[in-house]
Image 1 (tube, rainbow, N blue to C red):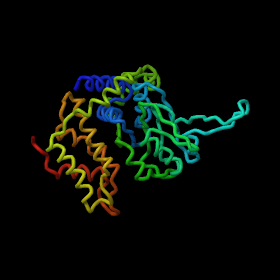
Image 2 (spheres, rainbow, N blue to C red):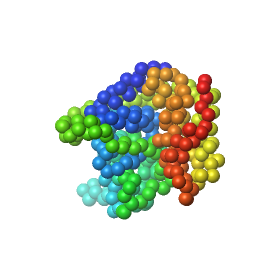
Image 3 (tube, rainbow, N blue to C red):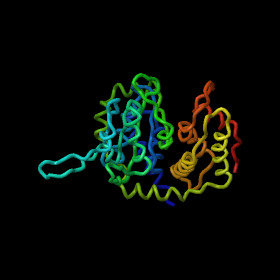
Image 4 (cartoon, rainbow, N blue to C red):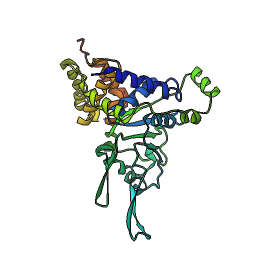
Length: 311
């Protein structure tokens, strides 16, 4: 396999998105992993940390049609998927596609929509298709849903159900910039102007090749066993209401393969599994009521406890 394709993609992505968001190389790399794995991204963080700007910059790097949806409590499923309307001139019904018919969909503050509207994303995120009035419409690749939500504000929000959380390949967080990074942001041009200068870094053909060839990365038996030991431990723990789904274990496997390829290797090592475990697995878990650990802390503690293969 040509690992240089993955290395070049990561370098270009870091260079472009790094112009917009400073000091968040790891988050940028992981969003790139999600794209190659045909997965979706949930970015959860405090207000004003650059969530929307980062995802806007990423959309510019991908190219294709981009649509941003501001989720609100009064948004309807048909506002997302589209509707059939009667064309009086033609004398027949026509389909008007909604904003989900794009290559890159930014679902801003997704947890502000009611569950009925949130569920409009279930089919599109898993099947890459939309069913409306008995008709099914296939969506063009690449297709990625990038959602944001605020973890500290509960008024007027509706938590995503487990079935929908499981459809996100990763859940990421940015955090605050350092003092020096924020000083640089204060002095430079407006972030929106910088985003406007970005151009696509990967063609549809190149992305298709990345998505095909990452599967050639080998996970040895010890590394695969290490991955499954993490997954199995979540299913057997009495500190969790439920463990990782099969979709989650497959996502961790893919993330390890792509991470290895981005490092220029045709084989994965335990660190490729370990560095992806929290963003891939934590949002798929539910700790029991009264636990002093949240899901992220549980996975980190699990990684510290489980033996790591040395070969």
